[in-house]
Amino acid sequence: MMQAEYDLIVVGSGPAGRRAAIQAAKFGRNALVVEKGRRVGGVSVHTGTIPSKTLRETVLNLSGWRERGFYGRAYRVKQEISSEDLRHRLLKTLDHEVEVLEHQFARNHVDTIMGEARFTDPHTVEVRSDEGERHLVSGKAFILCVGTNPFRPDSIPFDGENILDSDDVLEVNRIPRSLTVIGAGVIGVEYATIFSALDVPVTLIEPRNTMLDFIDRELIEDFIHQLRDRGIALRMGKSVERIERQDDQCVTHLEGGRVCKSDMVLFAAGREGATDSLNLDAAGLTVDHRKRLTVDPKTFQTEVPHIYAAGDVIGFPSLASTSMEQGRIAACHALGEEAQKPPEYFPYGIYAVPEISTCGMTEEEVEQRGIPYECGVARFRETSRGHIMGLDSGMMKMIFSIKTHRLLGVHIVGEGATELIHIGQAVLNLKGKLEYFVENTFNYPTLAEAYKIAALDAWNRMPRKGE
Ligand SMILES: Cc1cc2nc3c(=O)[nH]c(=O)nc-3n(C[C@H](O)[C@H](O)[C@H](O)COP(=O)(O)OP(=O)(O)OC[C@H]3O[C@@H](n4cnc5c(N)ncnc54)[C@H](O)[C@@H]3O)c2cc1C
Image (cartoon, rainbow, N blue to C red; front, side, top):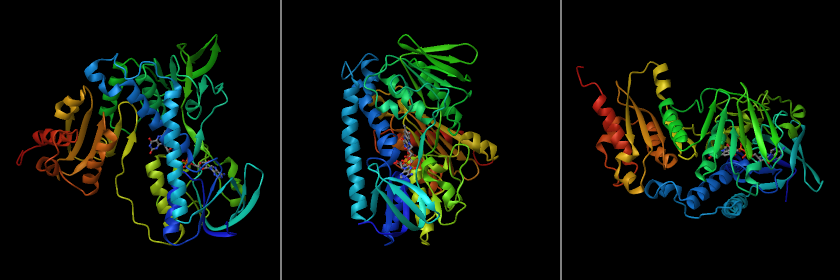
């Protein structure tokens, strides 16, 4: 039964909204989550994190990708992989995710209402359901966790069948014969490499000369080498002028006259805040050029003190993991409760094939800050686990302060990177040193041994006392 007034109204049930509402409930406050989608979960569950990661897992399993180091590039677990094969696992996973979330809300007594929220004044939203029902609800505080939509410039002739955005790509009912991906950001790179693992010829276009600028450059060089090695065509530093359909092909025209012909095009060059429907004027709020909200980075408070925003709608880093944490902190602040400060370093995970994961400072950042440092590198093929798994690629790089021996950053590209990173993250946040890795024993054979190898590599390069 919905109440007329809530301590906290959360708009959006993605990672930020879910975490904010449950935090409020844990404080014994009454919280309402408004969700305009058909089911709770947000972009994360329905069109973003979980579907793309499920697709990735299915592709890697059915294609036998992980075994190709041993059995050769032609090896496949299933010869003809259809879009049905890919969708089967997806639907099961999504059902399970939604069920878990609904149960979490019910267990914590968080009220939910399905419908679109729009402000009528700074303390009230009107919720309109698909069936046309309207409810007015008031809140002492609000957290806007409405996320983002794919950026769809008018110049791109999206048709949902051949020229797609990252939401459409999950709906197509066939696997492309060839694919052009526009935008080498996290989403573009993930989908480009997932389809390439299915042996779909892929061209990746990026208007800038670099990609994934927040990642250590040495890692990106290794990553790009791997992409080229398996035949992904990279077109860097060239903007797309137009896309047209010619016969049964998409022709992407690049600045300078080059063209890329492919069966499908995925446009993945950016996202914008899903703020259009909120009627923010009535709340006294404005948005930036990408329709995002601006907040105080410590409290997540907008310019209207009782209205907070968290998750992708406030911009970088736009990850499910960080969105959850932002939602939690925003809820604590909004309800006048003390929020434990988040640790200094959080990990980034890019689920490309191969995975990239990083935590702490890049070599470029360390240099910029003028910290004397040394690096250690380990290749996965140097570990016994790597041999057993047939890995011929994968590397870990660690950066240490020469003066204090403190770990400054860990950067991994390769199998299991997004899991492995958490060892480095713990040592970073606990202000651990090179000696930790040298002195401790790691399970054998594991990829985690790479930590020890990289640390020893750095140790060998470190100036000795008096040098
Ligand atoms: C293809 C893809 C892959 C990704 N992979 C990863 C990954 O591997 N790891 C990772 O950490 N992150 C990943 N992300 C990012 C991750 O999905 C987002 O960071 C996360 O979903 C953001 O959460 P959020 O809480 O901001 O809201 P979202 O998950 O964006 O959800 C917002 C919700 O608000 C609802 N809403 C919007 N307006 C209204 C309104 N007016 N009234 C009611 N409800 C409204 C929407 O319906 C939606 O359900 C990926 C994203 C994409 C697109």
